[in-house]
Length: 127
Ligand SMILES: [Zn+2]
Image (cartoon, rainbow, N blue to C red):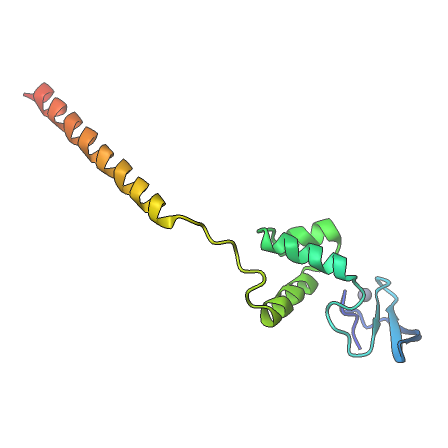
């Protein structure tokens, strides 16, 4: 058996939790029951906070530095959430794409006009 946190084999039995054998990792102090799942041992609030940081573009290593939760643990949480709720953490859609396109066309046509004006000035100076 391995510690889900640090993959150490230095595991001790640590009583029972909800009828299951509980273990503690001697190296990092992490407690877990048999056949541990990634989110065991952390509260829902902590899990949600990590997911929120991930959704807002924070890297898994950055989350690890802030929360002291192993980045593989966070990655597993994100995977689980994406599998269970595919729409819940979709990135926000950018509205009014059509207006943005029009603005871009307007700006580029303006650039072309001033560009051709500069060209004629340059050719005048050469001749
Ligand atoms: Zn450990």
